[in-house]
Image: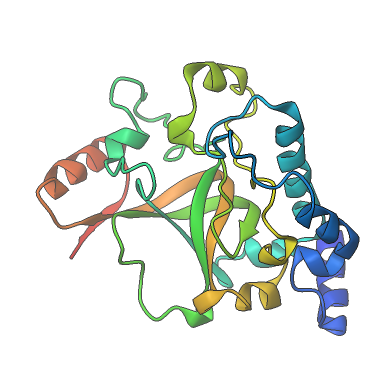
Length: 243
């Protein structure tokens, strides 16, 4: 088996048993981060900010995380269970909010029939610590995805629901990105399994994914559950109605 850079890094980390967060591998930058841009009070972190310095800083933090992260752990569904609650922050909890009926082309829907490029914020939990499935609302699980960032708490990333038509057009070629807001401590960004185990209840409150394809849509029983199921069937999306 070919020894990849990611696997080599994982072997070294397991031998040293010391790297757990971005702060552990980048202590100097971690100290700079605590005294850097911080939270800019007149900027909404959940929008696609036009301030180039802030955008560049967000992008650099994410690149740094990807440089050091044990991606073989984060992308292994046998190690980390990843799911997305519909409208957890935007309150757009309907399937049609994600796949507008007037915009989808049945049979060629990004996120259902082919990988979606717009990044999505999810939750993650170490599989061995799972005692029950997600139960706080309707959710997606995935059969394909790639983790591009993770943190123990809410990283205040950009929200897709806050993207303007101009943002969508400007980022059409790459898809809408989601990046941590400046000021989040590097110690809150786990880079491997030991780091994820440090999280409260061993759950990561922000796991950003791209190239995602939904496996199952779990619909909560309620007044609109039958309507949601009918639309899922129309989209060709596997679903399950749960209490």
